[in-house]
Length: 471
Image (cartoon, rainbow, N blue to C red; front, side):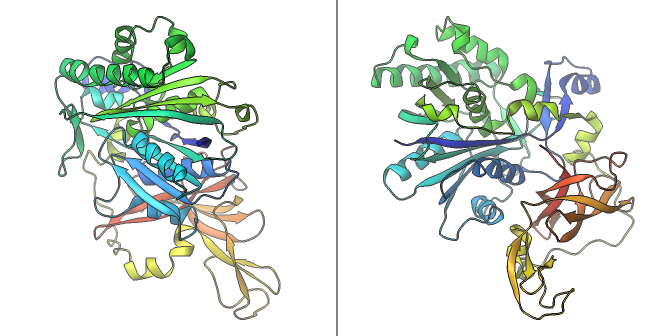
């Protein structure tokens, strides 16, 4: 019995009202709001957050990680390998990137199911994450949202079995982005909807229901992709779904269209409220489509999570359109009045990869003192080379002191630099993110998060920051 054993989500706290975008350009607002990744976030860092959230509820060892996105930070380098290093997964973990299609998440999901059925893996985490940019003044700018969803696929403690699937491909230029462009392009809206989305979703649903001899009355929920709320509602009518309660809402009004993570988020939204023996039909679209039949188990009643969709709604912070443009580097800014920083050293990153990516320090075997970065001489008892590895990424702490830096080279001024004292010992000096200068204070509870420091010399530099404790 193969299926979903755990799930995790991450949505940045920042929101941009669509009315705010409409105000800037004097255009019609689509209503609602969209999630916005901070300038130190991208599809990789958001995937890390969702994967951690998912793995924290896994009962089995993870031996595979598949990453799905249309906005991978590198065009030639595997993102799944970086995420696995941050998660501190074993070196023999099976990793793969699934990219360049909005349905990459369900392609990866089907691949994970096949691998587990074939016995080549036991527990694979599929994480979908996107941070797409729509051209300014376009509908896409209002529609797109940033976020990430992770689904663990395995055989034990399954909360929703995957009973069947059907896939098809279709060559159509509806939405695309070429190598040299930052913005997603799309063709005429009516053509994209009728010839692309409608035809594909209709085919998927009819074929999978025919293959597994199902009818509409047997389905508790139908989850399908639509590029926006209007198209989703139109598609629902064309498919003949009379019971609106059967249709899963998109969450586009609250978060925006999260690209590869859009449909997985809709699935998680249902699983948070599901009961045992609910049968779900899932249909995803993008260069063709994938359909899946799932059925919840008794295990769904025992699955508990602190971080759910509602908790991400409760922590939101609104930003201005001008701040959004700054974060996305869509407007030029004055260069910092200080010497330019040097590119990160590839050899140093490789040598210190365990302390950089998985945030390992070490602990003295003689007196128990915790050090970061790792040391050879204990600062307390001066013993030499008597240490054991000690991971800090999952530890909570408090701000012991801080400074507000107005000369920073960051995308936004000022930056907050703080010293974090961990609850179980050890300390680190790092940047404090998701916190305004007016909010920072001594003894503020914080947790660690993996973020992007910048890019120099064609290399993305990632490291850990602290943020106010979330749940």
